Amino acid sequence: MKEEKPALTDWKSLYNAASEFKKIKCWEWMLDSDIFGVKDPYHERIGYCCIMGYLGEHFALAVYMGSEGLNIYLKIQNRELPDNDIESLMAQNCLMASFEDWEFLDEEDINVLNKIKLRYKGFRPWPLFRSYRPGYHPWYLTKDEAKFLTQALKQSKEVALRFKENPEMLKPPKKGQYLVRIPKKWGRGWQWHDEWLKPEPLEEEKLVIPPINEIKLQKLKNKVKRRTGSWEADIFYAPTPIKEGDERPYYPYAAIFVDGVSGMVLHADVIKHEDYTTRFPNALMELIENTGVKPLEILVRRDEAYEMLELIASRLNINIKKKKKLKTLEMVQASMMQFFTR
Image 1: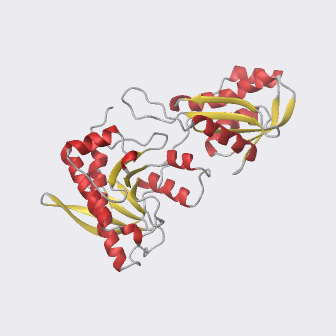
Image 2: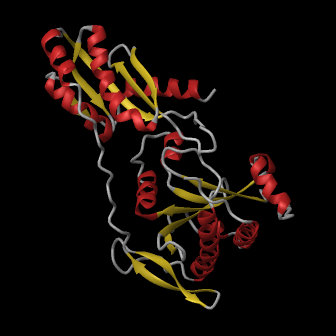
Image 3: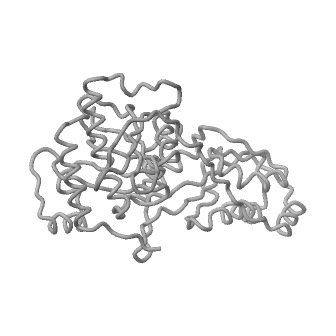
């Protein structure tokens, strides 16, 4: 379904809120670990706000959407995601208002600025607004996102100024709570107050794995007896986005199997979102069929990869383990990333 674009009045409100937020330079006294929430007046969701720029590199407000967005933020802070910037970027679930030089704006941003007749001067003067969703390329805001980001910028300015006077204000009275700005309808606008709230329980998405080809699996079990060392396997977002029609560009999955000793790539594939739970397990069976050997063990880094391969591995008497670091695979993956981003 096509999402509604912001009207000019929405853009004017958003740019004005961003300008007022930038004026106070709150990154001079706030860290990106000083998290607080803002409740969306229009859709009852909570965005968790992170002010960036204390190190003088990237000046922005990121609003992590709901418990899912907050969970990704915490994983990044705790270094629980693979240690590269591209994968961290593609896992984000947030809205962002950043301040950039002119060359970071694209045609659509410039068209909006021309329509509302805005110009900026100074250091990184241009507000830039983007929506981040897991597995998708950073994209332009929808109407709903623009309206919420406007309110988040206004409330972030309010919280930041209070925090400057009272740096203890974001320390929770109970573990796991966050200060959240809550709106109440007041005339044509909103009246805001503070509440200490725990995030909603995170709903883990259950991975739905289609049934495997039992006939093919039984044939492999009967036919392939030869065994060899260790294979390493992973499935991850490829860093080159694909755009279909007017839809938001997405990052396809890349699936790889490598020999754990030699580093030889045994299989590599690029897969659409809707196909990866079928094609990744099938790739393992095809690889065993084509080579005529099966490994003694398969090593993976991610829960999803383990879940998709575990049944096949167990039925073929292959030991499968999950490890945080797989040096051989990571070297191959780094080379693939370089190739994709040339």
